[in-house]
Structures are given as structure tokens and as C-alpha cells.
Length: 286
Length: 280
Image 1: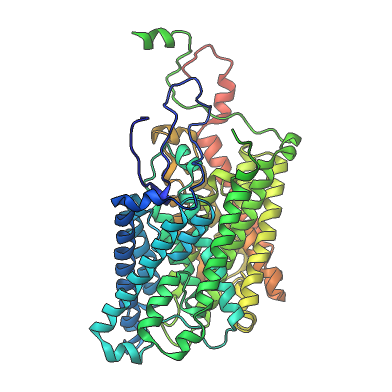
Image 2: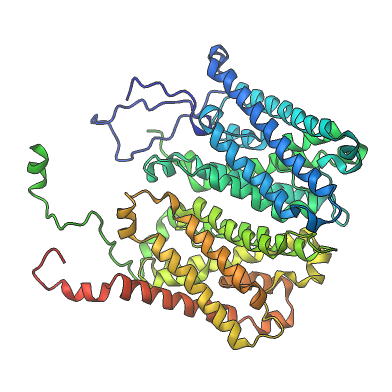
């Protein structure tokens, strides 16, 4: 096993097992906490798997925005809600698509599809700064292209019906919208941390069959709760893509909420998981 | 064969699982361990998130202005069941993923958690529930107050006895599913891979909600009912509150008795420990 080259795993954990099984130095745990990812790793840039991972994030986010925003447009242009898939259908589109895409992309890039997830994993030292920035850029570009294709299908209706952009609904303050985005992203990123935890993988006999399912469900559930408030961002790339293609004042006025909220939520989830649940800083350096 | 030699010194009773010994009633040693407090924090955070997402979904649905404008009762049921699935999945390895005083009570009766831990979990769950609903009220104050606050009450046309029965049977379904999903014998049969345990638990919650939302809004979780009642603080919510504690606890008791005494026959096995037949 020592010679086996394991490049990118779920959560972009790049460090393979260094200790061959069976040696006397093996601890009684059958998992090993991966060492923190270096802040800068120039060697990554020379590896095709690095560029491939970014392309995978681009394609995944493109497909995500295409399916979800097109679903939103279908609901908006329907004569009444009963004639469409409805709000619950929109939530399923978001959650179900994340499930499918995380499943497809987990082994290639870690299946983030969300700058907030990338940011949270970066704070937990699961990936380098270069990789984090690259992923976020590719996610935003993919989102813009995805929303662009939807607009290309129906330019007039797209502009007339809000373009699937995130805005804070009437009756809610910006503070409420921000709070909803923070807690919603906390749920998502915390689920990602739980699904990719090394200790959990060991307990599950290293069979990560179902990691994408709770992540998709978390997205679905947060959409059920906060679509009436903000249309549910919890994904800055999704909000940015729709805002750029829609390009109206009201979308940009509230846009800061959909970056500040998710990034705060991701940071809180990273703190909670690393410090409270895994207590990593308090463990002895063995 | 070396395998036969190494196995010679081991009593081979034909099972590849061991039932864990009963948890001690009072285990003060737990209080010195960080994993105990981490479990309490995990239960608190999980119940907070559970109540926030589910009650926000309920209020969002009730706020609808026309037919089909909200997520629908089906969406509300998904919110409850799906959230239990996600949170049990995240918390199972930390605290056992109870998120429900009735589940904690049932597992306590089955001697799977100590009294200290059970009480600690229940308190953390109730506090988390209060905070979760508090967040919903903070974010959507006016609709929260005017649309029933997501509190559990007995609906018009149903008697308190009917509601109590619905809560008992609903909680029986949930706690019985929890026992089945966490049974060491089942774990052995599933090759000790517990990847799927949270999914049937979440689905059990989802399906009970499909059935009993029209009757009581579905409690089957005393912390959920308590949190909403505290924040909403309405007389009718408190009048009916006892149903949402007595019902779930009776249901959990019935599920614990059914699983332990009938399905696993633990009492008979205890008597059988005096027999010489090692393969019992």
C-alpha cells in the first residue's frame, strides 16, 4: 500500500497513507488524520489532475445552474403554481442535482460545486490556497455559463421573470436574509465535513458509498426552509451566475448577502467540526 | 493451517457479534471525559438546526397566498424526515444521533445509555430546540406570530385521546426503527457497515409526518414540541403540551419493550446464562 499513488480523494485530501499496514509502529486506530495541506504547493500546477479537477468543478457547476435555474424559470412562467413542479420541485432540483454531481465529481475534485464548501475545507486545511482559488474561479465561471444557457433558451421571459436571481423577499430584512444564509450554509458545510471525515470513513469500513446523499439532502432541506426568504443562495457561485446574467439593480443590491453569509456559515462549520467535534488542535502531536 | 491454530484458544460460539453489556445506571466517570460534553454539544447543535429548518419550512408554507404557493404538507414532511436523516448521519458517531428525547428515553430503557447521559442529552435537546425556533422567530417575526408559530396542537375535530394515540404509535414507529437500525445482530448481518442506518430512521420520521400532520402537526419529538411552545408561548400550545411528552415516552417504552423482550428475547437469554450450552 505504501507505493500506491492516491492523488485526490473526497475533500481533496492529497496525502496518502504513509505507514504500511502491519508494521509495529501502527497505532491502534485504523485511520490517520491527514496532515494540513500546505498553503502554497507549486508542484500542483504541473499535475494534470489539478487542472482536471478545476474543469470538473466548472462542468459540475455549469450543469447545476442549468438544471436548477431552468427549473426555477419553468415554475415562474407557469400560469399558476399548481400547474408547475412548485417550490418543492425547485428544492428537489437543487438538492437532487448536488447529490448527482457530488457523486460524479467526488473522486476527481472532491465535489465541492460551491465556493462556500471550498472555503470551509480550505479553512480546515484540506486543500491549498492555489487549489481553493482555482476551484472558486472555475465554479463562478461555470455558474455564469449555466445561467447564460438558460437565458439563451428564453431571453425575454428570463428578464421578465427575475432570472432566477437571489434577492431578499418582501417582508424580510437584510439581517434576516443574512442570518438565513449563514445557518443554511452551516448545515451544508457541516454535512460535508461529516461525510468526508477520516474517522467516519474508518468506522464505515472505508466504504464511502453514501457520502453524497446526505449532502444533497442538506441542500434540499435548506431550500425548503429558505426559498421564501432569499430564494436560497447558500452557494455564492449560484447567486453570482444568476446575478451577472440577469444584471438588474435589485439583484446586485442584495448580492453581498450571498457572499458574506455563506462564507461566515462555512467558517463556523469549519470551526465547529475541527475544534469541537474532532478537537484536532488539542490532540498531542504524535 | 495457521488460522485453525490461532482460533484454537478462542471459544467459538457461532456468532460474529457481541451484544454490548448494559450501560451502568450512574457513570460519573463520563463527566470527566471530553467526549461526553462533545456529545451534548452535538445534540444541542443538531436539535437547533433541526428545529430551525423544519419550523422555518412550516412558517414558509403557511405564509403562502395561493394554492400550491408553498412547499406543501409533503414538503414539510420531507423537511422533518430529511433533516433527521442528515443530522443522524452527521451526529451518529459523536453522540449516537438521538435528536429526540423519546429516542434517548427508549435507549435508556434498553440500557444503552446511562442515566446521566440520558438526562444530559434531553436537556441539551430541549435547549437546542428553543434556540432553533428562536432563530426562526428572529428571521420572520410577524408571520411567525400570526401563523401559529409551528407549535403542535390538537387539530379541530380530533379528541385529545386520538392525538395521544397518534403520538404513541408514531413514536413507536420511530424508536422501533432506531432499535432495528442500531441492532448489533443486524450490523453483523450487514457485514458491519453501518452506512444505511440513518436513512430508514429519516424515512420513518417522514412517513409518520405524512400520516399525522393533519392530527397534531406531528410531535413524536418532545423537544420539538417544547421548543415551539416556549417561543410561541400561546395558551392552547401549553394546554396540549402534555400529550407531546406522555405520548412519545409511552411509544418509546413500548418500542423498547418490543425490541428487547420479544425480538431479542434478552430476558430469556439472561436466564439461559446458567445453562451449559455455550451455543445458546
